[in-house]
Structures are given as structure tokens and as C-alpha cells.
View 1 (cartoon, each protein chain N blue to C red):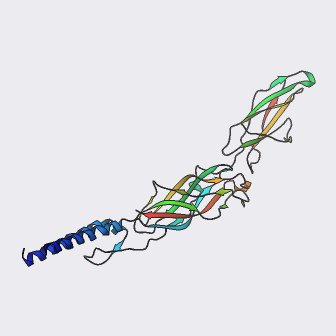
View 2 (cartoon, helix red, strand yellow):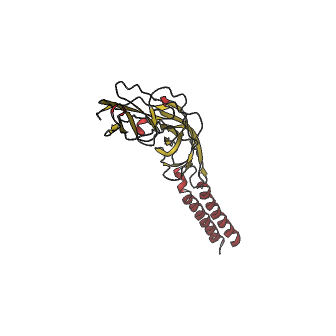
Length: 163
Length: 137
């Protein structure tokens, strides 16, 4: 093999390698940005934390809470990232408050320890989705009489993963 | 020389393979927010009064009427209040189920008045509608 032929072979091999690199990382471009034409290195963006928005009382047509029982928890998760995410867990992180009950509801009796999600948990890129966590909240028998009909706000931490 | 070229090509391919594996790693992040749950509201049922069953004679004549109702969502028990004259001032009797008999003196024609309220722990409704039934033994 001549020196010229060897150079051509080497160049072709490197080109193939770089082409595979670019093609292989193509899926990542939905979430990551890259720079440098012909360069296989990817530059990571910054993952934005998900946000939540209020769920109205009218969203609850079942799964209501009564003393000594359990009820549904609902939350709307917004994904500010340019790639889809999956909600993997929702954990309680504060005191539950009430509004709109029939009277004083200082003692809600409501608790939410958290739950994990493994299916039907996707949120599209830049989109939002409302999730129902069946039976995820409980109400103790200490709930005030005025809590009847109340809407409870449950502070949570929402964890998402890309993909 | 050919071995050196082959090694360079292999290194390039290995590098290419490493890029997508890094790209496929999931990102995880979390943020604070709020979720919601809602409480139900107890409802007082309206009772139904059964056919009186009379017993005894004269001053000892009694009538027993079965009071029944349909369970309402979230209620763990019901307060049944009845009397033979309005307003119903007798102390209520708490019933866990959905029916209860009431027995009263019926030596003379009477009108039975009955009403219910629902309860669950500290939750309590007001009394619902009062129903009546004439009793003549």
C-alpha cells in the first residue's frame, strides 16, 4: 500500500467513526444542544425543574376524603424542558392547608406521605399533564367538622427524569 | 504502519460508541409544587317509616315502627330522632346501620315524627327532612 493509499484509508476510518458518533447521539439532540460542525461532542443544557399548577375543586368527582378514609390526590405538572420527562415520584413536604370548607378547618386531618409512578407518567416537552394518585391521601378522624367540602392544598416535591 | 492505522480507526469508533452512551443517561430533577385533594360532604338521609305493628291492650298498647333509610356517602353513623308530637325533642339515638325500630305507647291514635342526621367522627350534618306516619292501633 502506498503512503497516499494509507492516508486515504485512515481518513475514511476516522470519518466513519465520526459519522457513527453523530448518528448515535441523534436521539440526544431532542434534549441536548450541540455545537461545532463535524464535532461529535455534545454540550449539555441545564435541566429545568418541573412546576405545578392549581387543580380546581371541580376536578374531583370521586375519590373524596372522609374521616377515617382515603381519597385521591391530583396535581398538574408542567415541564419547561425541551424534552419529554416522566414523573417518577411525588413526595409530601409540608403542612396541608384547607379552603372552601363549610366552616373552620384548622385541623384538616389530611396526610400525604408520597407515591411513586411508573406508568402513564409522561409529560411532553414544554407541556403539562394532570395526574391522579388514587387513594394517596388519608384523613384522620380528627378532621374538623368545618372541613366538609374543603379543597386541600398539599405541598409536594415532584421528581422527574428525562425520556 | 497498517497496525497503527487500524488502531486509530478503532479508537475513533470506540469514541463514537462512547458518545451515545453518555447521551442516553437520564437526567433527574425535582421541584417544589402543590397537589390537591378534596373532602366530601356528609348528607342527612330522609327516613322511611314502615307499617306499625301493634301489641298489648288498653293503656299498655304499643306500636313499633321500623324506620329505615338509604346510606349516604361518607357517613359512619346516623342520629335518629323521633317523637309523637312536633317538634321532635327526644334525644337522638345513634345508629350505625340503616334501620332501627321505634316503639311507643299507642293507646290513642298517634302521629310519629322522625328525622335523621349523618355523622362521621367529628363531622355532623344538620337534621334532614322530618317524615310522619299516622298510627292507630
